[in-house]
Length: 233
Image: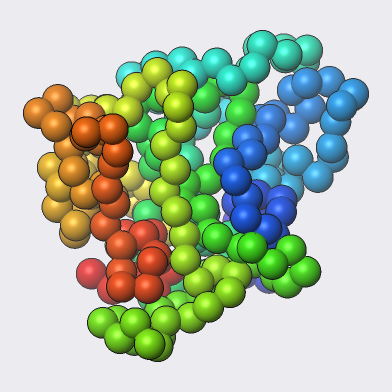
């Protein structure tokens, strides 16, 4: 419904066309009151689609661990934002998604952590030039690094943060529930399979922090494998 009202464009993942650096946004937009308050927060995906879903509880996963980023909530109790938007879809045309049944739309992108009152997108496009638009650039030729795009939207990053209460991706059993661009939701086993698991490694307990770092599946040009709008299973 949102894309029908906005010329088939997917919601915004964030506000800035720059190297976003992990800035979280309040959800609801007015969570912290009127000062300081940037009304552009209404444009962020989690707030922009609220007129259509009319509930913040849809973002909550009961199995997630609360992640308190700030206690400065002045307009009622903040929701738990466990579900995260695929930032590669930032303002992308819906018609450009090659395989809607295979491209992830929403997922528990902060693993088993659920930010309280704040959200972002994961992965996020790298857009270092703030003077130009930020949109995903399809890979020109898989396997040919010389043909990779450059500039804004040419690569992305999956982020995990110091201070997350849990980096375990096994939220439900040894996997998790993903929502896809065609609207269906399914449980996916997360055991390091590039065809279904965004992360490249797990320990015996499903934690993706192995040896102090984590891996992700990506194409030869630097986009996260399962999140690319032009992904073909």
